[in-house]
Amino acid sequence: MSRLVVVGQGYVGLPMALRAAERGFDVVGLDTNAKTVAALNGGRSHIDDVTDAEIAQALDRGYRASVDPTCIADADAVVVCVPTPLSEDGGPDLRPVRRAAEVIGEHVTAGTLVVLESTTYPGTTEEVFAPLVTARSGLIVGKEVYIAFSPERIDPGNDTYGVANTPKVVGGLTPACTRAAQAFYARFIDTVIEAKGAREAEMAKLIENTFRHVNIALVNEMVRFCHELDIDLWDAIDCAATKPFGYMPFRPGPGVGGHCIPVDPSYLSHRVKGQLGYAFRMVELAEEINTAAPLYVATRAWEELNHRRTAVNGARVLLLGITYKADISDRRETPAVPLARKLTQWGAIVSYHDPYVKEWDIDTSEGRRTLQSVPAAYEAAAAADLTILLQAHSSYDLERLEASGARVLDTRGVLLPSDTVTRL
Ligand SMILES: NC(=O)c1ccc[n+]([C@@H]2O[C@H](COP(=O)([O-])OP(=O)(O)OC[C@H]3O[C@@H](n4cnc5c(N)ncnc54)[C@H](O)[C@@H]3O)[C@@H](O)[C@H]2O)c1
Image (cartoon, rainbow, N blue to C red):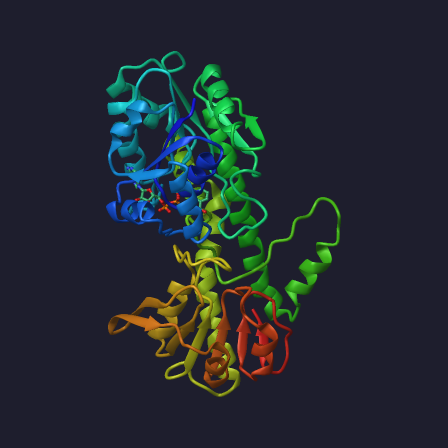
């Protein structure tokens, strides 16, 4: 087995395709976005974690991107990494997964392994994905076509764990499917774990993300009353984290962002509600708290300005770091958006600095406006009525920020509290 098609060449699919190419697979990166495909074939990366040099190397090894699904007919394995967003009513939007399954069904040939990696609710592979593949291909699962789920665990910006050394869970629709998936991934991933089946593999991913969502909500709720009670929650968390067993630290912040934490647990709660009729209360509560977190930051900004006898209306507020995570450019679901919206609704003059984002569209009461990242972060901070540190990118010189005399609301707990610096 050496010919691989990776469907979806985004944050997940591209690193996967390049790693497989490095390990000798003949890889085609299939994507419906012609611009992405042209850029990749021209040696240009659109993902933070992948450099142009890595694309060039992969192209030399035979990797190519394509919009033409006929390549599936020659593949020994097809891995699907398409988006799984939320629909307008907050439920799962499986249209990209369905489209990918239909296209695979049209072209797949006997003996192929087909793996879904997109995060989704338990049951998707068996009930939604596989029927579309088999209806079109007529192939029998476990005998002629091997279908499995394997959750993607990529952590953008993580220099320690990448595709190769992050253990991979696989769960097939039949034991033969699981074995085929295990054998495939073992060729380019150090550790592969067999789940009981596809549902358990799907559930494993949702446990991981729900765990993070709920624990972030826990501290985001605690930070509110700790502020009222004059308790430094960051210090308390650092102390708790000295316990060498039974505790894992999570820290408060301006809210959750990205493609996973705010989205995936909703897939699970939607499934529980839809199939069983009752609520997954922990997730609903976590959603409520984490969604309100940026608005709480706005309230704290108002409080900070009020202490200095400055009205929010007309105040110059600088946001430092607007991506959802440090050291990457991804702005999907970033809490900076609802925060900026609230501040501008209150009349604040919002500006921002982010080394990863040159331009940013924000909603104001007069409609959408495009902002440019201010050129000099520390000078702009010193000149603002309030600076809100939203994302502590490692390129930020925190000592310089403190020394600038800027009045800062630190939502990450990375600056020392002082006359000019307040922690959330
Ligand atoms: N980004 C992460 O950090 C991360 C981590 C773990 C899991 N995941 C999961 O992985 C999946 C993919 O996420 P991503 O961040 O790579 O998304 P992405 O938006 O970065 O990339 C998806 C790519 O798929 C392409 N695409 C969409 N529909 C397609 C189709 N029918 N056929 C072919 N290509 C298609 C898009 O053009 C895009 O290039 C999601 O389910 C996500 O929840 C993401």
